[in-house]
Image (cartoon, rainbow, N blue to C red):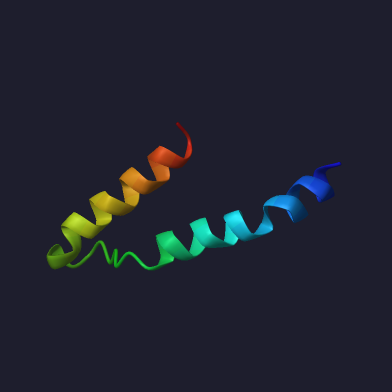
Length: 48
């Protein structure tokens, strides 16, 4: 049952992963502050 759910949603899971990975978010560099916040919002929205 779980394996079926994973297989049925595999592409969505991958799409969401790739979307978050495309956001530059190097938190030690101040020029990425907005991107770090964007990443945090993206992750938060996934749990809403």
